[in-house]
Image 1 (cartoon, helix red, strand yellow):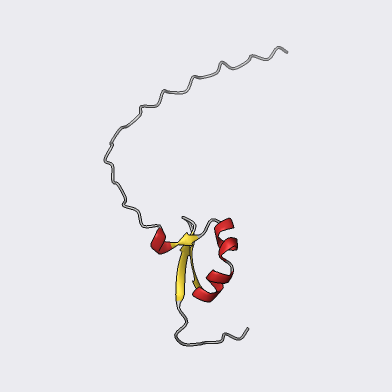
Image 2 (cartoon, rainbow, N blue to C red):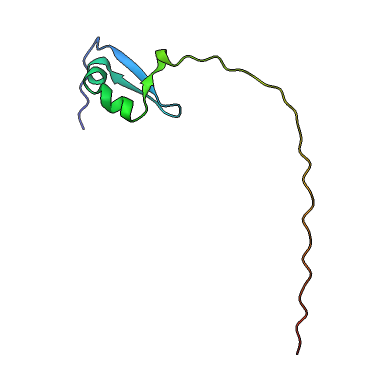
Length: 74
């Protein structure tokens, strides 16, 4: 595979929440419907503040009930 290096191509970063990919701006503009269908949005559009919560709630688990063993008749 030959990789062609062309200087000064504007790149855009896209994310779908899990993956972050980088594509040329020309490719993004020509395939914008495809990227929206796949769930990708521009990273610059998706800036959110992360709210940190410090809930230290511990749920106590109940012990499992033991099953009675069946006795075999011989």
